Image (cartoon, rainbow, N blue to C red; front, top):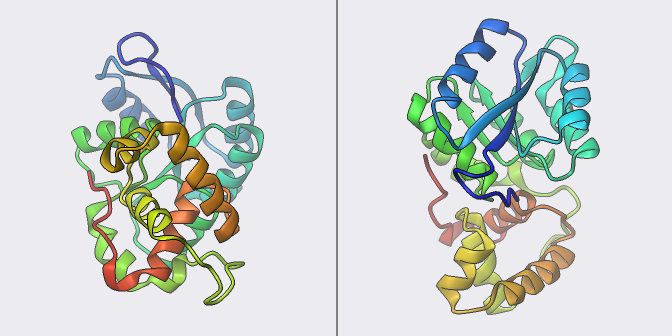
Length: 229
């Protein structure tokens, strides 16, 4: 999670899109905020990985389709060389299978390219501070196609979470940060981190987005609203 202070340490962003003109437009929008600074651009998977390794950005905004591979592949490789970088996908298309791949690749959000300028900037900031962001247009599809979001290695009907673990995971699935979970449940942040560590072990996942996907499958009838822009 990005740990800087707004106004003092701007959120450092990497833009990844095959089209230079689109990158220029994204840069123009994002840099209108004093809390965001675009520190690098890339037009291919290879360039994206190199820029992530060199600059270790807090957030990488990645197009789903790139000339030398998919944005999904870019996400995995960026996360491999810069584990703390959070990935926000931006695309024109909605495809449930692709969204499922985004989740399992460890992405932190998805937006449509018709998102407003204000919504785009807010999404980058939210992702930097630990939220999972999904465009309002796909929330309904997310709840309907829950099976597509399931972690492939999750054992069927064998995960036993305590009531408190389920409450914490439910808040994580809504996009709450550790601090917000702690405030909501009247716990310390350290206690929340300990709970999440045990939850991740039980679900056999390593990232919040994967845990949230598992929650959807395990608790479809009571799925809370996802965080929206």
